[in-house]
Length: 244
Image (cartoon, rainbow, N blue to C red; front, side, top):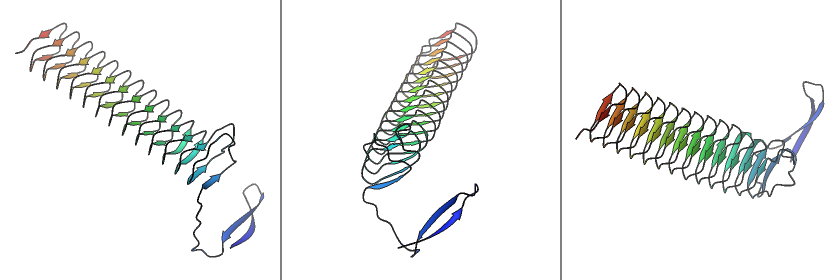
């Protein structure tokens, strides 16, 4: 079935290389393939593929059925989950996926995490890309970059920044620090310690501003409150717009 020959590598070490005699040969492995040392502490699944050191120290482990693990110290324990690089990542949700980074977890069904470190995608269809210590816990939520951000609302979105929270349904926060979008389809962009709490409310920049009313907005300034329906505040300090 095979023909083998000896070759030397760049360090002049002699290696044996074997290839199938028939180039059209297929290989069918019912249980799986482990490239690297066998990991005695891993409960290997069926139909797995693992590439890496795979020893007791690193713990590279394709534990679920139909799983894939590359990299260093990674674990794919959810059915049909995969980790394709990085170190100490875990894909524990069914069909979950982690691509690179370190200490990332994709525990939600069909969740994914790409790069970064210490990120968590815990909800179904949640997604985290890059950054550090971010958590997407709302269904269909997503976070791209930043640090210590949370997307807890369903369909919520977080784009960078630090310590921001998108908790409202279909809410979004882009950049800034300590901002929160609490209302349904509310949004906060930049600034510091701003809150978009009303339905469809919007806050841009400044600090300690709040858009509380329905379709209200606050742009820049500090300590402003847009409390009324359709109310708007642009700049200034400690202003209140009651609107309708």
